[in-house]
Image (cartoon, rainbow over all chains, first blue to last red):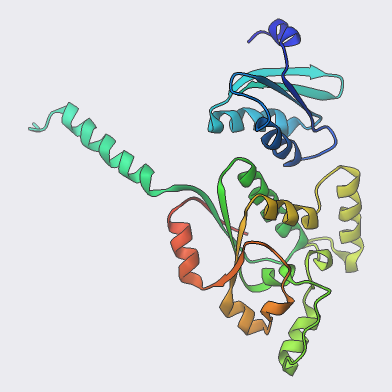
Length: 82
Length: 182
């Protein structure tokens, strides 16, 4: 997915995990994913470079669709579709 | 020249591969041997991470690592002298664990603990309670308990904690897709 698409994407659930380090963001994502329906979009905010690599792996394992990552000032926005 | 066609050989191989895959569960079996703060931290982060990815986790605590699971508030009476000696020289729970390097009589440990807070790294105490919430199983080696004179009554309250021998670990590890020793 192109970056342009990500900036305008409709986010159904936002998880702010900027205050935690590994494995905090992954845990936060796991907890939050249960609160959305299949097909809905979730974004994970993380200041952790590792999370940017971890979330796509988690998506592959769980069968979610990793949509891409936006770099913001000091953190990442990681998008996925359940 | 082989009489079996390539197609047949591929089919046989695929069947064998399927069988191999089926034997392994999406499960992490880990031997936790060390009671160094850094190693326990690594063991717990990997465990919680695996559980967050919905991998079943079974930890086999043996030897020194068992001291990390003691509850410092539980006092046990009726131990023999050697057990008391062992008991007093080993840590009572994760809060008393030392670093494997640069511990410097506890100065290094305190520095790392301080840095962890500063950088939002979860403490072993919090990780243990998260592990409990996520259903991480803990098995404690009964022989090591006996050897070091630890009593079941002095262990932490953990929902899925049991005592077992090496065969349980081997059986668990044998059917797990990931096996680690820390």
